[in-house]
Structure formats: C-alpha cells, structure tokens
Image 1 (tube, rainbow, N blue to C red):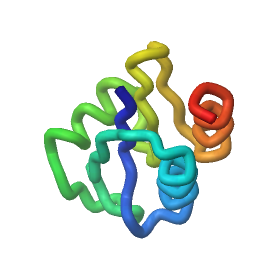
Image 2 (image 1 turned 30 degrees about the vertical axis):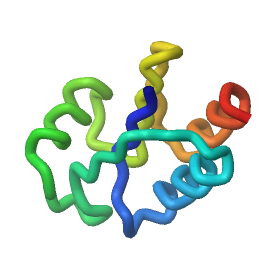
Image 3 (image 1 turned 90 degrees about the vertical axis):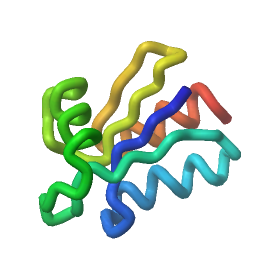
Image 4 (image 1 turned 60 degrees about the vertical axis):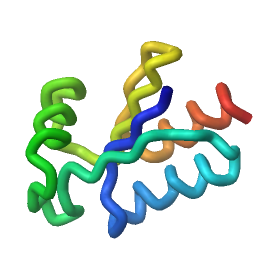
Length: 84
C-alpha cells in the first residue's frame, strides 16, 4: 500500500500525484498541512512527523517495500522503478 502525505497546492506534490496517475497506482492521500505550514489535520500531521522525522511534504510511505521517501524527484524515481 502507498500513502502520500501532500498538499494540493504544492507543485512537488503535484509531480508525484501526476506520476501515480500516469502509472495507474492506487494510493491513500493525506493532507496534513498546507504548503505554507498551516496544519490542516492534526492526526496525519503528527503521523508525518513521527514516522518520517520531518515536517516536509511530499512524503511517500511504501509499506509493501518498507520504504519511506521525501523529495519529489526521489519519489518519482522510486515509482518508476517499482511500479512502471
């Protein structure tokens, strides 16, 4: 299962969502905070920071591969390698 922590207005998150859509991959989306840092969902924001160690988006959790990634370029490369 893939989980993406992101914000709709973040251009880096958009890059990741577009790659996921292009590949036809199913994923769960979380919107923990805005691109400006305003917390929108306390629970998902807490999980983002606790699990990833940073308050940074986008953040991908790939539970099937026991992998977590920040940085949209790294996430896109991971998706292309494992889901294309």
